[in-house]
Amino acid sequence: MPITKRLFIKASNNYDSDFQIIPINTEQPLVIDSDIGLFKLFINIRNFDGSKPHLSNSLYNVQDKYYLNGEKINFNPPDKEPLESNLRLYIEFTPYRDIKGSALIFGNDFTYSIKPYVPTTLLNTGLKLFNWFINDSVKGDAYNDQPYLYGPGLNSFTYMGIKNDNKSVDPTAKKPVENLSDQLAKVPNDPNARKKFFRNFSKCDKFTYKKGVEYIMQFDTNYLKLADSKYSLSIPHFDFDISHYSNDVLNNVNWVIKDGGYEGVGAGDLGLVINFAVLSEEAE
Image 1 (tube, rainbow, N blue to C red):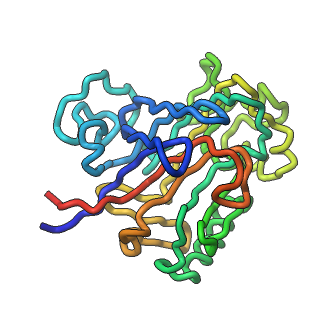
Image 2: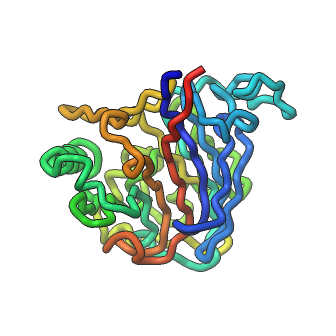
């Protein structure tokens, strides 16, 4: 039978153990406790064709009433509009300590070298175009034995807010309004303006994620395409077919949130590790 590569998505507070399978498109949170704080994680993916570990816990799309294995869900489906982005990470984070705004990092990393599998010229071009078109404040090293691409959460997340029973916080609104200005004056309430405002690291330093306060952090992207077991990265002037390069080693990447550690994997204090992997399965 032909082989299909399907997504397997799990999360932990470290790279090595205690991973839990993430239910996709259910709006049912996965709770991850860590040294830096408590995370409630929700992931939505348009047209999610998940691997076998997801068949009994995930939906093809947000509004579906049946799991991937055909069984009826045992909860009320979320009353939400269809997902407009290809991928959404929605996180509620309650710090256990004060964390400087510039120190809370969001990004991607690998715990192994990808140089043997992807041409270095391709990696270099992709990183440069990402800096030019997406976010010029990220720090990365594609040639490292453990490659990484990190930036401050303050200018990386699509939407941010302070929850704490503030009913005005709605990241799914057509024109979402943020409220970080409740904590630091002059922070714009428009998501794009907030990201631009915090491109300046000195302004990130003035913001503090306060102990015990619940923060909403949402990341949406259409640059990453994951629908129906077809995986690619597409940014202006750069298309990368992930499936073409994946193999038994180059088969997973991490999304991470941590306190400090721009120097790479192993630096800083880990909070959340979301591992996206592809499993080779027989196509039905």
